[in-house]
Image: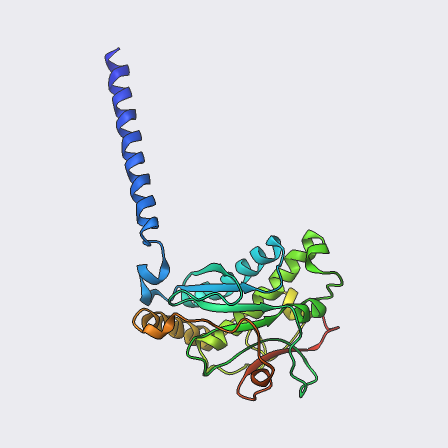
Length: 252
């Protein structure tokens, strides 16, 4: 009886301690302790605001986030994802990635434009052209009408384009490479084959840029703002933009 009582007390104390710890963690999260911008602005952990103008399936969004995160996290720390409605105000320090349904209006290049950035923007961000990416990987049906495997494939392809564009956005001085993740011309193999490598120089530039952005974002009052959820044609054809294109859609 005495042993049972002591064991019961120990178990009760353990449950009490666990309950207290759980409550402390919940309070820490609710107060913003888990928010990467508040927890450690110098860590390079980016908060990505995903603006979905296409209404993509959940499986596609999940695959996009997982693929982009797997590429970028080793270079610049963990990436957290938030969803923002088109035209919504960004939170301080968020980096917008805008998914667009239409094609890029650029007409001076024979390639299919998959995404782009404006390197001179005070807020880093990227546009991605979902329909173009879908065409390059051979998607013949709207994303919601496609089977689960095709939805996930689209997400993987989009995640790679997002990762490419975010390196440009965060490290605007980093130009295209001859190949790999930062190559300027992609094909179906780049989008769905073996995961393209982020070279050491690009990884270092991205990591430094992420830390620099987070430090400035937490101290500058102009870092909380609207960001265009569409790509104006006059801006889209400006030569100062950096684009990623698919030039050989049949290549595997």
